[in-house]
Length: 98
Image (cartoon, rainbow, N blue to C red; front, side, top):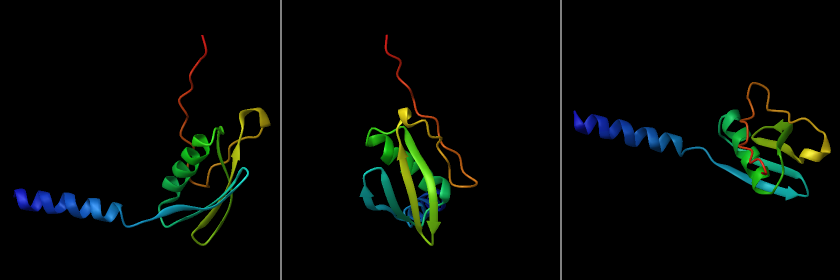
């Protein structure tokens, strides 16, 4: 029984690692991401990448095959964050200044 559980856990982890996501181009606030992952995982990756670059988040522009185009948006730009259709944007943890 332990062997079956171990094999199930290992195969699940291997399947999770079968997709790849990488930023192909980063110019200004534009990001070109190539990924074979689920759209929600791509949206989360893009949002995290933009937040790491001191933006508010990623706004979806277009998709062509496995390439996704995003625009990183700053809070003062007064632009809305647009998710990939069928996905959501996870709220970012905000730190309040005291």
